[in-house]
Image 1 (cartoon, rainbow, N blue to C red):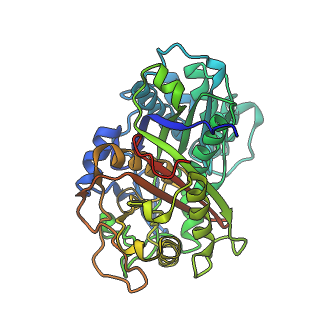
Image 2 (cartoon, one colour):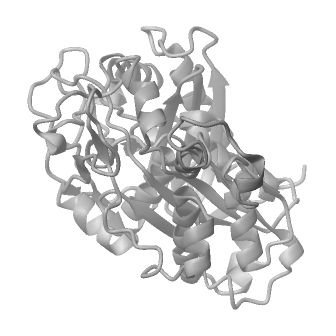
Length: 426
């Protein structure tokens, strides 16, 4: 039987509400600093939720983009390019002697260029008072409405001639993009994949869509206390923005070129609960199934997991559902495994959420540190595990289990390990 190609991570990059670049992000994450602030980029009068996780430090020109890119590209694409640049630089990929036809890209997103489309609609219709005049529409507007433009821009920047696609699976999009990249390399379709997700949903229409269904936190008077996963007084998620990019590479390919090997991607799983567009089955069975699929794909047992990077969205339903799923998969071991939610500090950047969390998981593996779940103050009997409350901690981690859930019933999961961890390999 042919041995399966092993896939490693050789670079990571991030744009997050609590830090642009992995050094700033990690320092703030370990210190428990929130990136949630009042929304000031548009009037929020009439909104029940008026806060969001925002990358306020992001300046496209300071981050190396050109004035033309800053003008033409939607914010989420700018995020993707900046995160990709950091990841590619760490991997040494740009100056490496590699076959560009074997380098691919997959950047997920949920709502593509909504900010730019909303802004142009207001201009073109004089704030909705006139019909659109087609001759006034700028020729590049279509790029904001096309989901694969972030992948295309990254591919163009680095001359990646291999598979290039975008996954639009909503709030699991980041993990699904990584899972797709994993399969591309395992199946021999690529040696290197630039994978992750980017999102910029802090717009009137996007926020209103979540606001009207009561999904968002209304804790406007204390923005940095609003996202509180697993806390009994949680009242909804906080919308966020950002991008996370990982360089996935076939292991022997990475070794031959002397690339830094940060982690190994060992397993991926995905499924649907076929239950409801927004509600979840109370028992967590579907999320549990995705976690088991990822562990099975990795050839590992639940008892090998020593850290969980949670979905932890800060909604009453999700956090209890996720806790039940972890107990189902890990059994008694669930009470011994530290679990933390990055969304407590960054909010929920939709498809990019789990891409940020995948980057964070790699940092946990390389640095031996667990970021906290901040704002955990009042225990919930339905959420009774170790959520690394309020303070980060040091711990050498060999195996990370990362789960994600999204509207439409989708659940996905990923298993990452330290590069020298040999458990589970057949």
